[in-house]
Amino acid sequence: MQDNSIILLIIFSFCGLLLWLVGNHIKKKEALKSISLPGLVLKNVKDKKGMATFVGNNLRSMGFISLLIAGSIFLLPTVKMLVLLMFLVALIAICLRLIMGLKKFNK
Image (cartoon, rainbow, N blue to C red):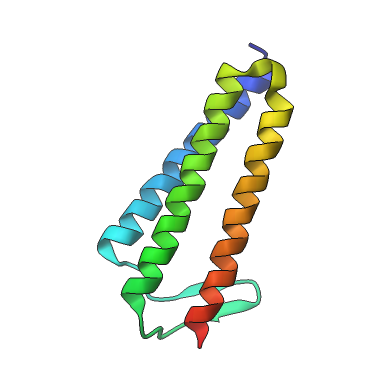
């Protein structure tokens, strides 16, 4: 295994575990009162439980995809770039779903 593959494996594993844990914490504790993203600020949301569940589930999905990326780098080093590209597209799609879904909580 090449050095850059090991570095990618460690980075994606760490990010995946971190996203999974943060998403789990937000979903269980409903610890989300406001969100601030570029162009989208949510404060004083009425349905805090729904928003916490939505954000927690999306962060957990992003963490799972990151762990799948790390696993694919480890198990499939010959097609690393193709698998990495497919999973990154899935990760971007989940991020867009999160941002677009948060806009409905703004109303």
